[in-house]
Image (cartoon, rainbow, N blue to C red; front, side, top):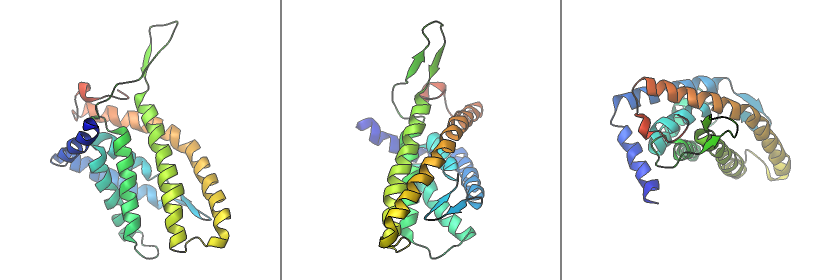
Length: 211
């Protein structure tokens, strides 16, 4: 439990670094670009802006991830205003960044999960991949299916008489999206982590996953 809460303090310290602010700003901009190419469906919208938030959470932790989620939502509304601005959705976007930061933060003190092949000496660290799966499933279930559906129902974006159809559509949309999301996370996160290491952004002993 102590390690869990210390993760937030470590992440908060990241905000004192120019590198953190610069890279976070770049990925927030990337998120805005990805948001532009969203696909609107009945009761749902498909986009891959979460990928940028996932990278920020992995590199800089839950505190930075939460703030990045808030900023992305506010800036996204300013750049692409649609409808009214509801602060509760901004908070939800922050929680999304929090989820990725908690699950993926590379300085989180935990044991690596190693797969050893029986007939060879090869080993693969699958920790980052398992964390990515957990983070995306939590995002889909908690944010997309539970919180957003509840808020959409509360604000009458979804009417009670069409709730069943909306739930079926949202579940189908998220299942389909997961098919693309998971491979993208598996490719992007290790690549982003490797690039960050080459920049001297962290020491190998601090990395508990996906190195």
